[in-house]
Amino acid sequence: MSSQAQVDMASVSPSSRLNKAVRQQYMSLPQGDKCQVTYIWIDGTGEGLRNKTRTLDKEPESIEEIPEWNFDGSSTYQAEGSNSDMYLIPVCMFRDPFTLDPNKLVLCEVLKYNRLPTESNHRASCNKVMEKMKEHCMWFGMEQEYTLLGTDGHPFSWPINGYPSPQGPYYCGVGANNAYGRDIVECHYKACLYAGIKICGTNAEVMPSQWEFQVGPCEGIEMGDHLWVARFLLHRVCEDFGVVATLDPKPITGNWNGAGCHTNVSTKQMREEDGLQYIEQAIEKLSKKHMEHIRMYDPRGGQDNTRRLTGLHETSSITDFSAGVANRGASIRIPRQVGQEKRGYFEDRRPAANCDPYLVTKVIACTCLLDPEEDEECK
Image (cartoon, rainbow, N blue to C red):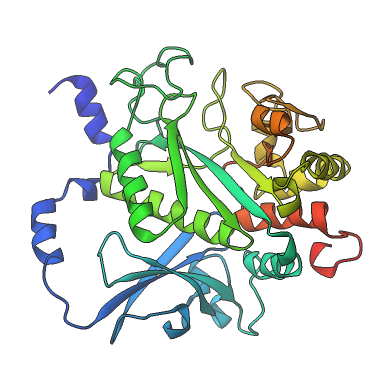
């Protein structure tokens, strides 16, 4: 075995090297009429995902048949030990691609002891906003960029004591010298399709070991639900391969691209004939709320995006708002086809890879369709 291969093996988790044939023997056992349900929730960091599993007597046919549950919030940065029980409220159900049918994955909201949403539960307020503007049939599509790392924190397949060749051949690249970790990407894609996630594509990104998948179009609250579960599936697939997927917006300093979560937005009016005027109206409103949006577009109020939105590497400046047709260096990009057909959607390129999609879609909806100064949920 070469020294590089030995290094690569050392940077994957030990559990990923367990005998999978033995595991498959047990996974193939029948489970009778019982159903395993894995509850998934966002922890107190606003970025981390947690999960635990229980047995139900039969396969649930709808989310209403999934019972509430609880967990220890003092171990997830969400409560003190003296009052640690938190409520798990099931909101969205998917097929489980790891233990297979009839088992389920269930995304949950988290409520505190008083049954109010936790500080990291932004779904509750987002859902209220989406219900208010339901008539606009607002569609979202989010492009999730991420970077693969070894368990040692070093980019997956990068030289241990150096750097790969400069950016250029990696974006949508093919070949062992250009695409690092495609097995993970393809397994994640299939897992999403099996689960019922509205994943619509994937590609290798500009920096080596960086990839992207796209989810959408999704209407309203569905965008946040599907992206969070797609992230869960990504982390679980990476766990099986023994590597780590990071959503850090600038995982490698220097002349390397960062990672964003570009957000495509369209209302019914924008999609209809001469819809470009409504796109332009939305962009004008967004221009007046630039810094407010920046504060919502990463978990640390813009601090993470400061490292990424520099005006270089296909980004706009974090301090300046800009818009343009086919301009990937602008805050808002109008795709060339939209400019030609004068209807469609716009792309907000500012959200960071680690953004909360509930916050992103909520603030966009508030700014474009509601009065942020008067609407209580938008304040």
